[in-house]
Picture 1: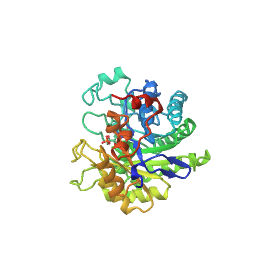
Picture 2: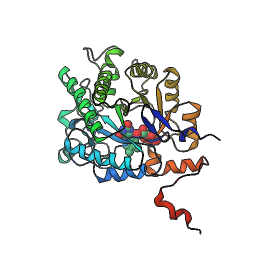
Picture 3: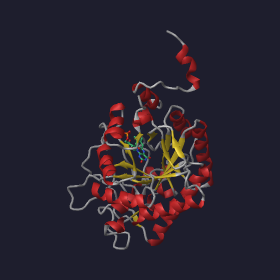
Length: 377
Ligand code: FNR
């Protein structure tokens, strides 16, 4: 019988993924103060890379110091950062898997603390101690996320250009580090989402107002990063993904970012040569109507609707994927192209190998496990 789609390979030009089960980017709040990856990252990401997952996506990695969500986030804006990233790439490649990086800027959602240190945030005393950067928060408009967050400064034209340049420089470092995939983080209420949504973007210049104006920043970032990939001669070897929030779950308001907007955006992204759209949702407002949780397949239907509406664009599903049931729903029923798996792999780094067994496949466990399979009880 043919391989289940989950374990069929997928190629994007010269880039070949062994299967379609990919690690979703997840912040670990374990970087050094300067955003440099540590042995923690090699160990955590390595534990997944040794066990059958075909793409290891590194967590949201800031393109500038003030673009970090917390001072413990990864960065990709210095030579020191670059050395740390090279170690991650080298290890994942030694396991014959692909590795990607999610380039990010938190905008008004920056300068927080790791979630386990405080309940949300504790301004301003704690941040001072922890090396926060509250005073430098930027956004589309001067509107805070909620009362616990400081008010960001609305970026001026020069500031927007600096953001685009930081994504460009981040992409240069990512290519130098050897990453196979660059994913642009346009989801979850971070800086680019703040420009996309009419709730957080009240600008009156060409970056605000109409849909086209609100979509200008992500399109400019995509073009800038595509240029960098082309200049490096890596067009065929590196794939460019974007993660978006398909809806901000504020349909009760007169104006909000909705699925139809994402479909329009996805078409523009396809024209700008985004290879794959990674479809998430929410995160732009504390008033969103969707309860966060671990509901099975909770975003897969949104991804499926985009897949049907945008011909020829690869689409990845994410959210509540826990077993063959949710994988089949995404890849078979909704005809999506890959699944990103977050918490299932966080809990069990060999979840992918177990999934293969659950499909009845003969699993090639890591060589180092050899004796585990020979010992008879
Ligand atoms: C996340 N998520 C996330 N998303 C993202 O785009 N960039 C990131 O850095 C993070 N960080 C992060 C940290 C942790 C600890 C969790 C649990 C989640 C969201 C994640 O990638 C994924 O989209 C969601 O968790 C839903 O998928 P699962 O976990 O239901 O498979």
